[in-house]
Length: 162
Image 1: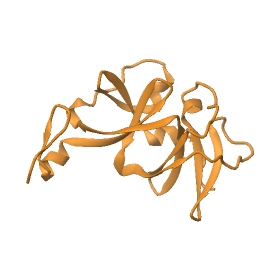
Image 2 (image 1 turned 90 degrees about the vertical axis):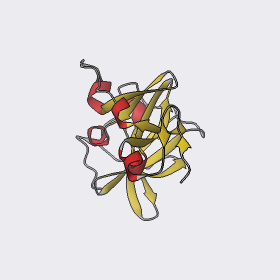
Image 3 (image 1 turned 180 degrees about the vertical axis):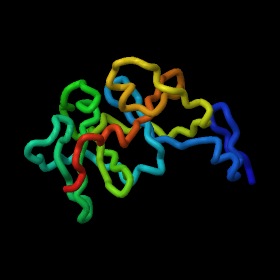
Image 4 (image 1 turned 120 degrees about the horizontal axis):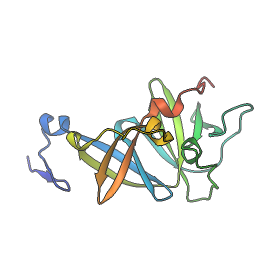
């Protein structure tokens, strides 16, 4: 089998090669880049609005009906405490599975698929920033820091039983 070259590391397609790397879908919110493991992503769709629900947290934009499944939409910018996203036709929703449920996160753009060696994932520095609570790790890619989203933390405190 021919080897695939990733940025700095070779991937030979073997089980050992995949066990030592993770693939991420990278997306942006402003200048910051975040990522989630590709295995959690179910769909990427254009922002077409959401149906608001009464008495939800400020970062819950509402719900969408995705082929019969009701999916709550989280505004990731607002979840990180930076205010509601002023949506345009260029914004996208990344639909992901969190356990048995599906959730969507509203982001500015999806930028890349990254293959990262597992040992390049670093712990989030201690601090009282909201980012530290909502991230499971940090990696460096192309001179940028990529925050790894902790999906359980993003949806914590919100009932997802629509």
